[in-house]
Image (cartoon, rainbow, N blue to C red; front, side, top):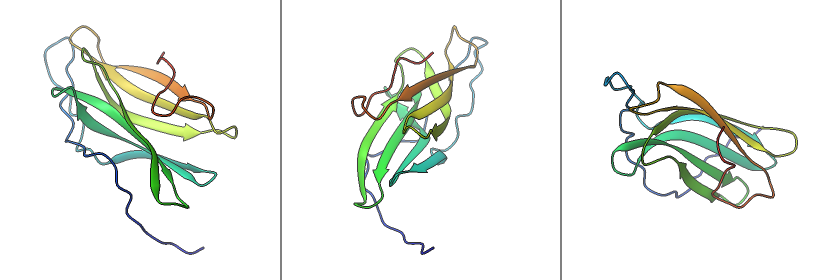
Length: 130
């Protein structure tokens, strides 16, 4: 196999904010580096922590078309009242992108949520997390 590299422009990202939890201590959400990636059918999905709503940590997802070197999707999963962080994603044989991530807030101790985006779903959106 031949390895090659190329740059893909995506929206600017800021270092994620620390996450809050009910006992008032903050949780480290890392430095914004890629935490998860998956390849299927010419596309690479990447996931990392970012900052959104000025004071929140959120999950950032980018879907890259490898053949054309462009970002097909580039969006955050977050909330104004909770922090989302430490994503892990996978793509199944049907092309569904499955995402699990941590969530916490001043009233919710660290928990896990999951969501999915199917190939026929709207771009830059996922199903309501459970």
